[in-house]
Image 1 (cartoon, rainbow, N blue to C red):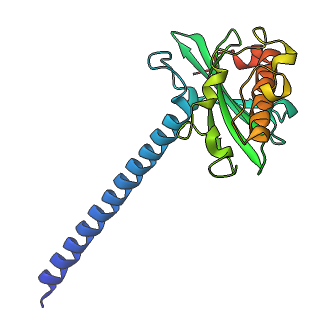
Image 2: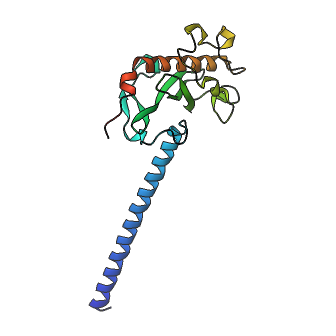
Image 3: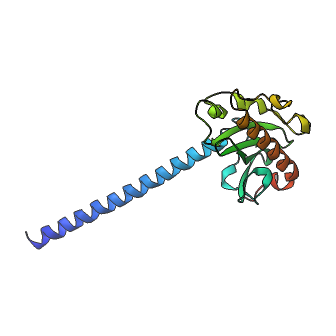
Length: 202
């Protein structure tokens, strides 16, 4: 094989390597973008379509650790706005479930009314406590439109404890934990409105 052939093969190998590197970088970027989109859908699906026009996850609101949110570590919230006006705050909360922590996400309107609630993670008993999951039951919908103003302190209990909220049959401890966590999260929102509803810098 002469020198010209070797040079041609080296050039071809270099081109192939460059194509492989470019393809890998493109695929990595697409995978990252798809992962980010999935993360956004998991958090933003509590918000009605058209209710916001910003990118809430791009500017998280740093929050200190708080017993009301049930988390011993600092956390963060997200503000949804439309035309610069706050429409909802996404606020995480942790309940002390029967089998361990129950991680929740609440969407709260600026007036303090609960828009929606979802479970991000838990270890509750399969077939019983896991009915807090929307795919297993519609139980979390009992909190829709709930607020501190609309429910006096004594009502923030399950009906088994003479409160306002239904409990999941066979999972009273789980139900109590979630009701308490939702109440405490609304209390946190009520005491931190100025921070939570302040529009973040672009």
